[in-house]
Amino acid sequence: MPDSKRFLPPEVVARLGRLELHARQVVEGLLAGRHRSPHCGQSVEFVQHRQYTWGDELRHVDWRVWARHDRLYVKQFEENTNLRLTLVVDVSASMGYGRPEQTKFDCAATLAACLAYLVLRQQDDVACVTFDEQICARVPHRNHRRHLEDVLLAFEQSNPAQKTRLDAVVAEAATLFPQRGIWVILSDFLIDLAQVETSIRLLRNKKHEVTLFHILHEDELDFPFTSPTLFEDSELSLRTRCHPPAYREGYLDALNKFIDNVRTAASRYQAEWYLVRRSDPPELPLLQFLSRRLRSFRLRPHSPRI
Image 1 (tube, rainbow, N blue to C red):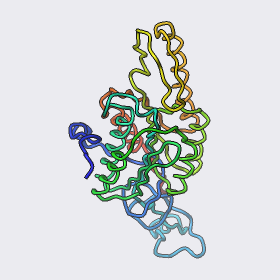
Image 2 (cartoon, rainbow, N blue to C red):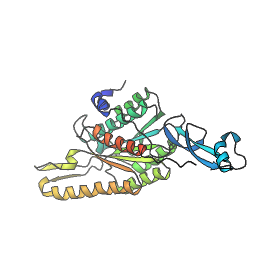
Image 3 (spheres, one colour):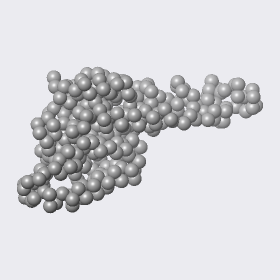
Image 4 (spheres, rainbow, N blue to C red):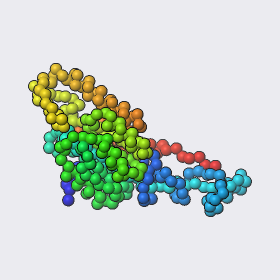
C-alpha cells in the first residue's frame, strides 16, 4: 500500500472543496458522463436542428417544426462522455532538488495526486506517466477509486536520477493514450525550449487540451545565496564555484527570460501555463486551474435552436 499522506495530504484535499474538473473542448471516452463528445447521436442534450436528408430516421424528425415551417428537420443531440485526464510527471534528476520530501518532484506528485483524486471522485478516467529520458512508469486510464493507489504507487517508486527528454516521451505517450482529453505536464522544464514546443504542438494537433505546471524551487526563483557556493548541474555533471551576489542580477534576468519563453510557447499553442513555487501550498495552483476551467464550463455558449 502506498503512503497516501505523502502525496495526498488530507488537509489539502479538504481545502480543495467541491470543485470539479471539466473539459473545455470535446473529449472522447467509453462511459456516459458530463463532458461533450465529438460524436452526435441520440443522447441527453439537444444541440440543434438539421434539415432532413434522404436516409435520416423518421423517429428523429421534429414534427412540431414541420407543422410550423412545412419543412422536415431532424433533431441532433450531443453525446456526453467521460473525461480522460493524462498526468505526465517529470522524475528527472533536476526534479530531485530540495530537502527530503520537499523536492520539486514531491510538489509535482502532490499536485498530480490531488488532480487524480478529484477526477476519480467524479468517476472520470485518469492515467499517469512518469518520465526522465524515457517513460519510467505507465498507469493506464481507469475510473475506479482504487485506481488512485496505482497512481500513488507510481510516484512512490520514483527516484529522480536521470536526464530529461520530454518530446520523445510525449510522442510515445500520445500513441499509448490516443483518445482526446486533458493532458497535464508537471515539470521544471529545464530543457531545450524546442522540446517544450514540440511536445505541446504534437498534443494540440491531436486535439488534446494541454496544461503545464511549471514547478521551480524557491532557491531557483529567488537565488538567496550570499556566500561563495559550489553549484552543480544534476543532469549534466557541470560544476562551478562563484560568489552569488555578483551573479544574482544576471541570473534572475536569465531566469525570467526562460520562464517567459516557456509561457510564450504554451500561449502560442493555446495551452494553459501555471508557475508553481515549490514552497506554496499545493491547493493554490490547483484552485487557480480548476476555477478557470469551471468558469469556462459555465460560460460555454449554447447552440442555436430553431
